[in-house]
Image (cartoon, rainbow, N blue to C red; front, side):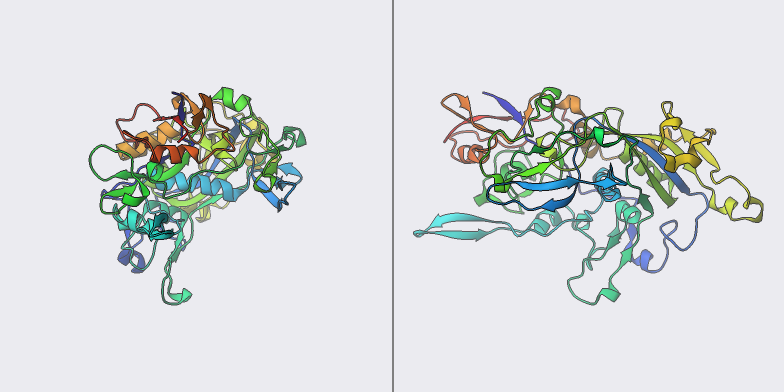
Length: 467
């Protein structure tokens, strides 16, 4: 039988004490230490990190969209800045904040409460059977990991860093609790021109089984994990696998352009894009104020968890697009108290500076003209990143770093397929046949095994004969 890696896996959400949480009561009483915008706090980290982002597969982040017709696919233009390909700050912020939430086991700042159900043939007709909602399943792990609302008692470290707005069920907007971010992202810019764009391509249909799909999205609370059918899914005995992240693809599949459609059928469900080439360099920066040592360590970790880690960014991640290498190349610290003292009026902007061994300051875009000439001073930031990494929950750390390491991929990454007369079914046309075959199997059925501290390899799923 052929084995496949599912296009995504999950970083677990765990029920454990979070010492970095801030109580809502202390927040409302302004007992907030450095979590504030009204003043600069001494002995905290403020400044700028400059990062180099290198595409390791083609990537695409869209702008304007022309909708599809029956004959032609949708057409999405690439995001441009000053007529050059660029990476929007919102995409970078979403990428890093979601990783920070997962790494710190924080509340999920963006999550819709999906109502789950399935359809069953009963008494001569198809009936809709209601299941527990997504929030109900996550609340069984820990209610504090749900988006902030009136029932929340704690503000997690990711919410303290990236901000939040209370999800109000009742009351007025004026009474909602909210906090602005202390971390600010720039757009990613490149010195390359239009020659870094590939020719337009039509993507394969981005079909995949949606939640609840229990064989992939859920696991058992206790005991060995095994297949869960929709009919038995229950929040009393099942919990979500965790936070969803996309896997990297093997180099040979990227080189074979596995994301391209192979037929001209169902064009109204497809999208035409113009990707950015692999090995294109971008630079962006992250500005921040009043970060504690712990918060700064979390930010450093999410930018570069390990030397082998690669992020996934943009559209088509499940098809093999979007692999990027983010490298912090310079940290420039601002001592706010010294700068705003009478003696500091004519002092340099940056009080301390760290530069990576391969910083290549001369290649930085013109927006970093002021930082190009700054020289490094003795400043160790790696111990802060490592201190956060060492303190992480081991199940979370192992899952996150396994998903982000391209070397962990041993098989083709695709929604699992069936075989028909000994031949593999079309990956674009037969997306859901595997799940039908799995549900109808006699004996042991396939399911996605959870990741934890004991996971040394990325789990795989087997192909199945067509039901």
